Length: 325
Image (cartoon, rainbow, N blue to C red; front, side):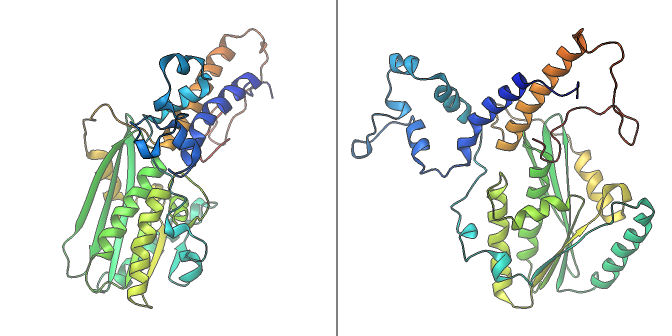
């Protein structure tokens, strides 16, 4: 318990997150209208918005709102709660529940690795010669805050299609989902394709596509769902499968994409906006880093402070990986 970050740090985290929470709201929300500092029009004048305040009024305004507005300049939109794809009664999971499926790997037993590779090989053999099937292999990697999203699209009687995109200041989950988005978009555009098989190592990201709740991947999810809706409507027999392929297997098709994602050297362009999820992670990492420094320099931890180890004998440290608090 001694290693937990103090309440003060938690309060700092809450304060920082409160500044990015409004970005979950739709653009026409009243709070976004108040924060709008664009030149007003005579027929839509609002004397309470930030753009209408004088410098003296801004000084008197509570700093939290001003800080929130400044932060909005650096974050690109990722939420889209009013998109028709998320409207009640319009969900793909309700209207086309038989058109998609997930094939998961067994993560608990390492000896199952060979069995998973065999399953993937058999899937390739069954579908590689079928001209109506498109195989989409995706992966993403991040180096120096630059994410590389790559997808390879295989289809009989078609040349290999590759999509390569990079972005600065996004999380690995966002980069993975964007790779899936690009791959599915290309597969849906191929003629006579009735079955799409997507292979990736982050199956939890693919599940976000069908998550109807509010989450910072809605922009990508909405675009993917729109493509899939058109694909399913075109023919009742059209379907998509998501196969999990952990990177540790080094399965040949996925390993090729993995190597591609790490081989590109990209020079970022600045200034660059950051994603909502990256901003949340950066704020949390900053607080944890500060606490680690203070804790190591503190005399309060004592000489016999107990360090906890994980399964790989590494010291357990505070982390926000996989959606931590």
